[in-house]
Image (tube, rainbow, N blue to C red; front, side):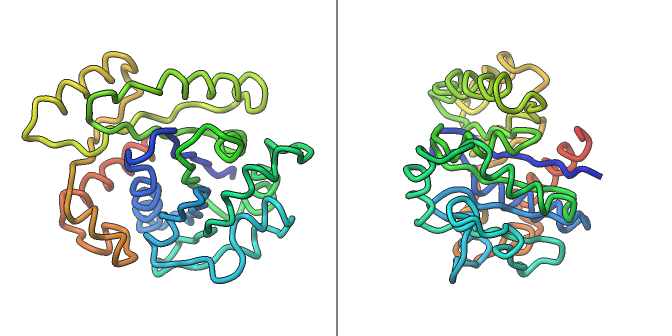
Length: 252
């Protein structure tokens, strides 16, 4: 059976992309789905958030040095959860890919050889619309877009949607938006409610019902190298990501 390949993408930084990639992957794995998290961001937050660093090979080696992806994947502290780590080296790939043949399909080609080993492949994208993100969107079957509950939440989304349509028309006709995820909600303010209403009004049923709250526990968990369900299973953040996972599975 073909796996679902979900790119977690938004060119704005600080919207909860890596947090979402880590915790969605961990929640899927906790339900027995064999899940690969590909850290495709040179900042490597998804790698460090799972307590791992690329001591040796990372996803850069697959893109540029033609190493098989299978050689880079490592186990994590959770059963069924695997990681293809990133490192700062990946920042150089953006430049090196410019002159490469079939530069948009490098990641897709790497995934092709290992994808039947997994139920889900989650790609944590960098906060830009450069060649790395284009590679991720070309490889993915669907996109999850985290959007922060703040003023200017919609800013940049139209540019992202333009890029998605370009990739859909030219490189990946099967690509679809799985959903928009509202993150960093502060329940004490009206602003969060207003932003959620605005985004829902624009995207209708594409917005997940689950909203991720602002949470100290969610912020702390990566510094311990743990997903939230391992760090504090009973926290609001853990409940929210388990709710999101249910929705993702139902949408499949």
